[in-house]
Length: 277
Image 1 (cartoon, helix red, strand yellow):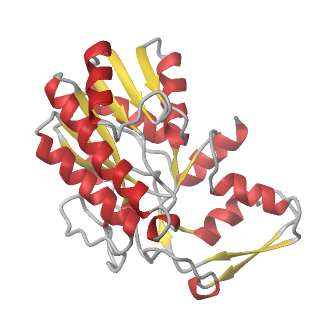
Image 2 (cartoon, one colour; image 1 turned 180 degrees about the vertical axis):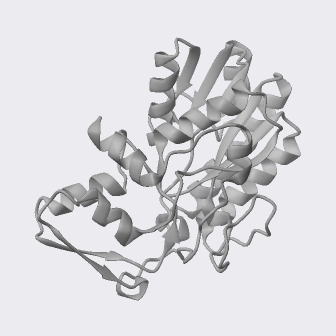
């Protein structure tokens, strides 16, 4: 079985490569310079040459605030047009597709966990583009999994854990938002789940995947820095204005993912393992 990874230089793309190497699996990985997924002919040519059995679509435009203005066009080109090109190529070359989406497809007003079947209502440009990308995957009729995730952290790239550690090194006191509720996701857990779906031949469709248990950004930051002398203080979102809307409640149900037989670590245990590594 041969895997093709898009977004090779991203947080998840690098984690996927690490995992595939550990498992001795055959793969090819493309970053945006090696394969511009917004170029349809280039995508089709890559699939023609590589003949992948499985596509792990980790490429994405993730600059949520920039997507509201300067990055609006690129956001749509990558997350919608690029995803459509990859999905159509997967269908054409009979490859299974695992595409990554986001909790931002929801508006964050629910008081209970979001299920895969719940109504979507994205409130920022990034979320609208990722939802359109989901629709492109569905409309391609490829054998596909859509995996929605949230609050991603890991070994590679920039993420909340590294940001908190960097700030803690130069500030004795940090303020962190305490009125947004969600679930952190370790890239290792996400990568393992993507391969798990293929391994167990799970039913195609949409799945939610994060680490278990619920947190605010304040909870997450306090856990990251619990062994330091830094004071972490809670504040409201109003004290941290951002261009793009952030959901107040983006807790997604993990029941469907667990029903596939996948065991999910709590986010605290995942963070502990990550920091130990």
